[in-house]
Length: 75
Image (cartoon, rainbow, N blue to C red; front, side):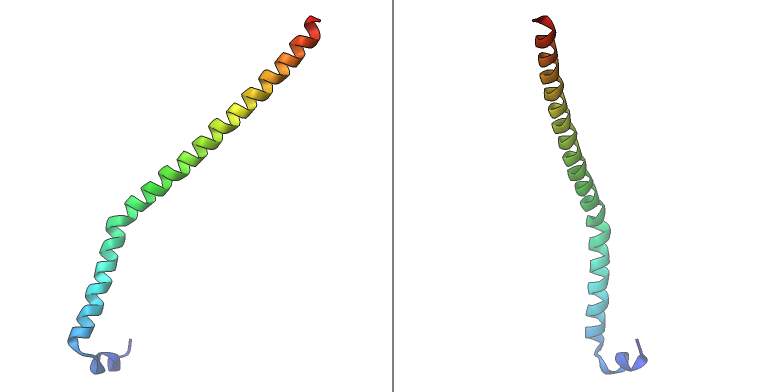
């Protein structure tokens, strides 16, 4: 910013801007890793659910095909 900005604003206003900026940086540093960890756990949870769900579907299909195959060949 130009020096004129600092000439026309009061010190208190400038200090509030600096302290708010530092507070925001502190919040990101403090809560950022926690948020990333939570998002990672949620995404792995969805992937695990999809994997189990797909395996169940596959097991049902294979079991159905085996029953059909064994019925055709035993009769």
